Structures are given as C-alpha cells and as structure tokens.
Amino acid sequence: LASSGRGSPEGEDPSVSLFRDYLRLRTVHPEPDYDAALRFLDRIAEELELPLKKIEVFPGRVISIMTWEGTNPTLKSILLNSHTDVVPVYQEHWKYDAFSAFKDAEGNIYARGSQDMKCVTIQYIQAVRRLKARGWKPTRTLHLMFVPDEEVGGYKGMETFVKQPEFHKLNIGFALDEGLANPTDAFTVFYGERNPWWITVHCPGSPGHGSRFVENTAAEKLLHFGLFFIITFSLLRLNTSECFTLGDVTTVNMTMVKGGVAYNVIPAEMDVSFDLRIPPTVNLQEFERQIKQWCKEAGEDVTYDFAQKHMNQNITSTDESDPWWNAFSASCKEMNMTLKKEIFPAATDSRFIRAVGIPAIGFSPMNRTPILLHDHNEYLNEQVFLKGISVYERIIPALASVAALPDEA
Ligand SMILES: CSCC[C@H](NC(C)=O)C(=O)O
Ligand SMILES: [Zn+2]
Ligand SMILES: [Zn+2]
Figure (cartoon, protein in one colour):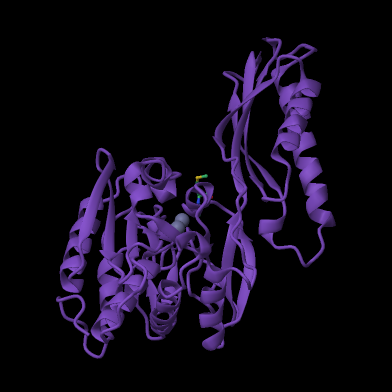
C-alpha cells in the first residue's frame, strides 16, 4: 500500500503517515495555503492514476475533482466531498504545535483539521486506493471533490460552484460530506442542517447628555428586542425534554453589540447582532414575521438586516425504502455499526448540495471520540482513523452499486 512516497515513521501505517503529512499543510484561515493542498492532491491523483480537474471558482479559490469513472457512466454519480481549509488556532492553548500532527503514546494525533475534516479527505483517498488495488471497479462514477472556504461560509467555494454548469455536468445522485465525532460507541449521521440566520438589528435613538433622563434611547430599544429574543428561546430551551438534540431546537445567541462614543454621550444608534440556528421543521416566514413584530415593538424606527439567511429546508431521506440511504445504512449494519440520525446543529457545505436537490449525508466516521472541531487540542486516534478507511471501503462500493433508479432507466 504505497501511499505518501515520503516514507513512514517506523511501524506506522502508511495511511496514518499520509494523514499526518496532510495535517501539516497550513490551509488555515485567514490566509490558507491552498497551493500546498493543490500540490498534495496532484500527487495523490498521480499515484491513484485518476484525472484531477481544477475549477477556479474565484481567484485563488480552486475546487479540485478527482474522478473514477464508473462502468456505467450514464448513471448518476456519487460525490465524496471534503473541504481543505481549517479554522485558526490559539496556539498558546495547545499541548503541541497545531500543525505538527504530533502523535502521543496512545496514538492520538493532535492537529487542527484532525477531525474537521482532513481525516475524511484521507479516508476517502485511502479507501479508493485499496479498492483500486484489489481490482474492484465502480458501476457508478465516483467524484472526490476538494473545496476551499467552507469554514468562512462557502461563498467562494461550494455555494457558488453548485450553481455552475460544471457542477451539473457531474450528474451527482448522492453525496457524502462531513459530520461530527461521537463520544460513544455509535456513529452520528446527519440528514439535514439547521438554517443559519445572522441578523443585525439597528436601533436608532435620541442622543443627549449621559446625566439626563432621555426617552427613546438606542440602548432601551436594543434591550427590549434582545430580551424578547433571548427570553423566548431560553425559556424554550428550559422546556425541552431530554430526547431533543441540539439540531432539533432553535438557538439564539447575542454575539455582537456596537455603539457609543463616550461614557457621557447617549449614542444616536446601537447595533446588536445575533447568531440564530433554526431547525428545518420551523416555518421560516412565520419566524421572520415574529422578528419584524419584535422590532416594531422595540421602536418604530428599529430595522434589521441579514449577513446570512439560508432559506432552504431540504432534508435527505433516511427511509429504509430510499435506495441511497438503504445502501449506506445496510453497509454500516453489516459492520455492526450503530447509527444515530440527527440534524446538524451548525452549517456545512451539505446545505448547498441539498439546496440544489441532491440528497446528502453528513458523516465523519469517528466514534469513541470527543467532539473537538474548532476546539483547542483537536485530535483523532490513529485506530479510529484507520477504522474509518475500512468503513468507507464498504460504503463506497455499496453506494456505487445502487441499481438504476426509475428516473435513470
Ligand atoms: C453560516 S456559514 C459558517 C459555517 C460554520 N460551520 C461550522 C461547521 O462551524 C457555522 O455553522 O458557523
Ligand atoms: Zn468542516
Ligand atoms: Zn469547521
């Protein structure tokens, strides 16, 4: 199983060495070294003898697609998606250099991206390498897609690409993308996501001297709106029963407050921003009407605007009769894996895939692992990582062998 071409530390599985090589690339925001990732992928494509297509969606923002053509390329294809960027680190809070991929005595590999989601990228690659090595051939075409900028909202990546003809030409029938670790023996799979709404409420008000009683101040309006928002959703949260997961409920957090110039000057405007996450079961039009109403009650001149307002609420079928889900879940069952179906609490590129009508499952095969994405000391155990390759080695053939669907006949 030749993999990295750079040699492995003695006794180390070459897949683990390749993973650690990839973790050392500094594809970290705010200035990700995407060229390093592209060079790495070029080398992999050469090793796997698969064509690698590159599409520059924005200057310096390239999507690469490695394609393994199926024996029946007219059938819809399978997308194995992963993003190449990672979020920044507070190095002073890490036990080891976050880009050294240090492996401790237990086999825990510490690095930014070890869970989110460089593990999945390498697991796809190594599963494909093994399948090729044993002479297996896919019926449906497989596309391994590597996208930039997921961590900053996906605008210069997947969001734009799904609207381009090059994406449609891929003729994707089903997609896999990232999920989250699960600390128990089970694996979590995500069939939908909460919609992110990032909203700023602008509160103009009467200015004046800080020593006086002034009516209709900006702060008064800000607090009025903020309290309604927070109390409503805090109370809701208190009333939720244990069986709900984070993906099932709406959350609201006040994340930014702006305004004011001096202690003794009542400001003429204050802005307050919120991060809302809304499950796919909520009526979004009604939700916005409620926001509008609270703004009005806070003051006639209070307005709001959105920095993010995702409206699509498509979810992916996890019905046993669905051929994609059936192939995915049956192969997991064969490996005695327990799956927990959930709505993803945050936002990934899956939302853009589902929004164009393609079913997508968020899945990162990491059980018995604490959820450490975006956290200090993000790590993944090498055994869990290696097990994930075997998992994809079963899932990929199952998906690529889904029989022709009625609309493909
Ligand atoms: C709304 S774009 C930002 C995307 C980001 N994704 C993750 C996984 O953290 C988030 O949910 O905040
Ligand atoms: Zn991610
Ligand atoms: Zn992330």
